[in-house]
Image (cartoon, rainbow, N blue to C red):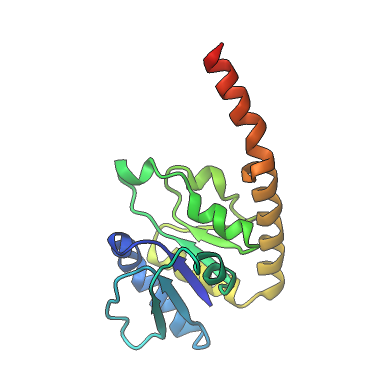
Length: 170
Protein backbone atom coordinates (compact mmCIF):
# COMPACT_ATOMS: atom_id res chain seq x y z
CA UNK A 1 0.00 0.00 0.00
CA UNK A 2 1.36 3.39 -1.00
CA UNK A 3 0.14 6.05 1.39
CA UNK A 4 -0.07 9.77 1.88
CA UNK A 5 -1.28 11.62 4.95
CA UNK A 6 -2.19 15.29 4.90
CA UNK A 7 -5.01 17.78 4.72
CA UNK A 8 -7.74 18.38 2.15
CA UNK A 9 -6.03 21.69 1.30
CA UNK A 10 -3.00 19.77 -0.01
CA UNK A 11 -4.93 17.32 -2.22
CA UNK A 12 -3.67 19.32 -5.21
CA UNK A 13 -0.15 18.01 -4.45
CA UNK A 14 -1.40 14.48 -5.13
CA UNK A 15 -3.35 15.52 -8.20
CA UNK A 16 -0.24 17.16 -9.68
CA UNK A 17 1.67 13.86 -9.66
CA UNK A 18 -1.37 11.67 -10.33
CA UNK A 19 -0.24 10.76 -13.88
CA UNK A 20 2.90 9.17 -12.37
CA UNK A 21 0.96 7.38 -9.64
CA UNK A 22 -1.56 6.08 -12.18
CA UNK A 23 1.29 4.88 -14.44
CA UNK A 24 2.90 3.01 -11.53
CA UNK A 25 -0.45 1.29 -10.89
CA UNK A 26 -0.80 0.38 -14.57
CA UNK A 27 2.71 -1.14 -14.50
CA UNK A 28 1.90 -3.04 -11.30
CA UNK A 29 -1.85 -3.79 -11.06
CA UNK A 30 -1.41 -5.00 -7.44
CA UNK A 31 -0.58 -1.45 -6.29
CA UNK A 32 -3.08 0.20 -4.00
CA UNK A 33 -3.14 3.74 -2.70
CA UNK A 34 -4.46 5.13 0.57
CA UNK A 35 -4.79 8.90 0.90
CA UNK A 36 -5.54 9.94 4.47
CA UNK A 37 -7.03 13.41 4.79
CA UNK A 38 -7.28 14.09 1.05
CA UNK A 39 -10.39 15.30 -0.75
CA UNK A 40 -11.56 12.47 -3.01
CA UNK A 41 -10.83 13.01 -6.71
CA UNK A 42 -11.22 11.02 -9.94
CA UNK A 43 -8.64 8.22 -10.08
CA UNK A 44 -9.44 6.78 -13.52
CA UNK A 45 -10.21 3.34 -12.11
CA UNK A 46 -6.99 3.06 -10.10
CA UNK A 47 -7.80 1.67 -6.64
CA UNK A 48 -7.54 4.46 -4.06
CA UNK A 49 -8.91 4.48 -0.55
CA UNK A 50 -9.71 7.99 0.65
CA UNK A 51 -9.73 7.90 4.43
CA UNK A 52 -10.49 10.75 6.85
CA UNK A 53 -7.62 11.91 9.04
CA UNK A 54 -7.96 11.49 12.80
CA UNK A 55 -5.40 12.22 15.49
CA UNK A 56 -6.10 8.87 17.12
CA UNK A 57 -5.60 7.00 13.84
CA UNK A 58 -2.64 8.88 12.37
CA UNK A 59 0.17 6.54 13.42
CA UNK A 60 -1.89 3.40 12.79
CA UNK A 61 -2.71 4.68 9.31
CA UNK A 62 0.96 5.30 8.52
CA UNK A 63 1.97 1.92 9.93
CA UNK A 64 -0.46 0.37 7.43
CA UNK A 65 1.52 1.79 4.49
CA UNK A 66 4.41 0.03 2.74
CA UNK A 67 5.67 3.26 1.16
CA UNK A 68 4.96 6.86 2.16
CA UNK A 69 4.81 9.71 -0.34
CA UNK A 70 5.31 13.46 0.00
CA UNK A 71 4.78 15.29 -3.27
CA UNK A 72 5.25 19.06 -3.26
CA UNK A 73 5.24 21.72 -5.93
CA UNK A 74 8.34 23.90 -5.90
CA UNK A 75 7.12 27.28 -4.65
CA UNK A 76 7.98 29.68 -1.81
CA UNK A 77 5.41 28.17 0.59
CA UNK A 78 6.45 24.54 0.11
CA UNK A 79 10.15 25.41 0.26
CA UNK A 80 9.41 26.43 3.87
CA UNK A 81 7.83 23.12 4.88
CA UNK A 82 9.78 21.09 7.43
CA UNK A 83 9.60 17.55 6.00
CA UNK A 84 7.53 16.30 8.94
CA UNK A 85 5.60 13.82 6.82
CA UNK A 86 8.88 12.15 5.75
CA UNK A 87 10.03 12.07 9.38
CA UNK A 88 6.77 10.34 10.34
CA UNK A 89 7.19 7.77 7.57
CA UNK A 90 10.81 7.12 8.57
CA UNK A 91 9.91 6.85 12.26
CA UNK A 92 7.42 4.13 11.29
CA UNK A 93 10.11 2.29 9.32
CA UNK A 94 8.84 3.16 5.86
CA UNK A 95 10.75 4.18 2.77
CA UNK A 96 9.52 7.45 1.31
CA UNK A 97 9.26 8.96 -2.12
CA UNK A 98 9.25 12.73 -2.06
CA UNK A 99 9.69 15.82 -4.19
CA UNK A 100 13.16 17.39 -3.86
CA UNK A 101 11.75 20.61 -2.44
CA UNK A 102 12.87 22.49 0.65
CA UNK A 103 13.66 20.38 3.69
CA UNK A 104 12.74 17.19 1.85
CA UNK A 105 16.22 17.25 0.32
CA UNK A 106 17.78 17.35 3.80
CA UNK A 107 15.49 14.91 5.61
CA UNK A 108 15.29 12.18 2.96
CA UNK A 109 18.58 10.63 1.87
CA UNK A 110 18.07 9.66 -1.77
CA UNK A 111 18.85 5.99 -2.32
CA UNK A 112 19.26 5.35 1.42
CA UNK A 113 15.98 6.23 3.20
CA UNK A 114 13.87 6.73 0.09
CA UNK A 115 13.80 8.26 -3.35
CA UNK A 116 13.36 11.78 -4.69
CA UNK A 117 11.11 12.33 -7.71
CA UNK A 118 10.12 15.39 -9.68
CA UNK A 119 8.39 14.42 -12.92
CA UNK A 120 5.45 12.03 -13.25
CA UNK A 121 7.85 9.60 -14.96
CA UNK A 122 10.25 9.74 -11.99
CA UNK A 123 7.33 9.17 -9.59
CA UNK A 124 6.16 6.16 -11.61
CA UNK A 125 9.68 4.71 -11.75
CA UNK A 126 10.39 5.23 -8.03
CA UNK A 127 7.09 3.67 -6.94
CA UNK A 128 7.43 0.79 -9.39
CA UNK A 129 10.96 0.08 -8.12
CA UNK A 130 10.01 0.14 -4.42
CA UNK A 131 6.73 -1.73 -4.88
CA UNK A 132 8.55 -4.55 -6.64
CA UNK A 133 11.43 -4.95 -4.20
CA UNK A 134 10.52 -5.89 -0.62
CA UNK A 135 14.19 -6.14 0.42
CA UNK A 136 14.86 -2.60 -0.81
CA UNK A 137 11.77 -1.29 1.02
CA UNK A 138 12.90 -3.03 4.20
CA UNK A 139 16.49 -1.71 3.93
CA UNK A 140 15.35 1.85 3.25
CA UNK A 141 12.75 1.61 6.01
CA UNK A 142 15.37 0.44 8.52
CA UNK A 143 17.77 3.21 7.46
CA UNK A 144 14.96 5.75 7.73
CA UNK A 145 13.96 4.54 11.18
CA UNK A 146 17.58 4.82 12.37
CA UNK A 147 17.81 8.33 10.89
CA UNK A 148 14.55 9.41 12.54
CA UNK A 149 15.67 8.14 15.96
CA UNK A 150 19.17 9.65 15.67
CA UNK A 151 18.14 13.01 14.31
CA UNK A 152 14.51 13.76 15.10
CA UNK A 153 13.42 11.83 18.20
CA UNK A 154 12.69 13.41 21.55
CA UNK A 155 15.97 12.00 22.88
CA UNK A 156 17.89 13.57 20.00
CA UNK A 157 16.11 16.92 20.04
CA UNK A 158 15.92 17.61 23.80
CA UNK A 159 19.61 18.53 24.24
CA UNK A 160 19.45 20.81 21.17
CA UNK A 161 16.31 22.48 22.46
CA UNK A 162 17.84 23.04 25.91
CA UNK A 163 21.06 24.44 24.37
CA UNK A 164 19.01 26.84 22.24
CA UNK A 165 17.01 28.08 25.24
CA UNK A 166 20.16 28.47 27.34
CA UNK A 167 21.90 30.38 24.54
CA UNK A 168 18.90 32.68 24.14
CA UNK A 169 18.73 33.27 27.90
CA UNK A 170 22.44 33.85 27.79
